[in-house]
Image (cartoon, rainbow, N blue to C red; front, side, top):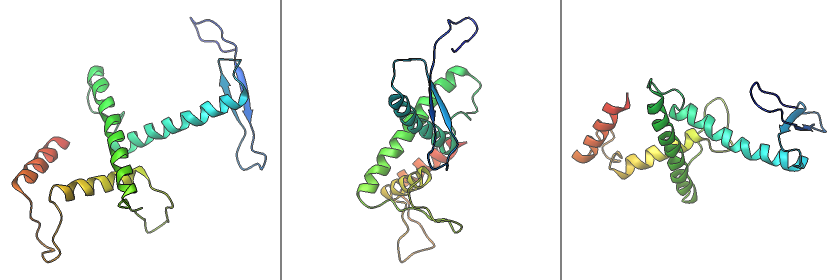
Length: 162
């Protein structure tokens, strides 16, 4: 039974998951709908895990839940925008993957086998900056030619970033 002060008592269905090879600790899942079969409870858990990963990546890379506003209304407005930004980066990165233009950035201390959101964010930024004319020409490595419009956009973004 699940009990919370001021709420009615709810019966629970417990599903115990154990790894037959013993690599992972046993884990108990609970569900307030006792009619759900154990396989479905586990499937729901797996589906929720994808959402948890999305929130963790949005927190880590986009600053969700670390906003500097004090107003709950402001936070309520910015959180959906950050999740929208996460979705937009993911969609743009997917387009880059299909074009074969999203490399897996490697660190000196370990090899990554799969893309991370950090890779996707860096590739989308690079693609956008190239698209607005911020690429360095091959013959002039120490100078960068930037259009007036691109410079104004960058100036605006840099001023508003903090």
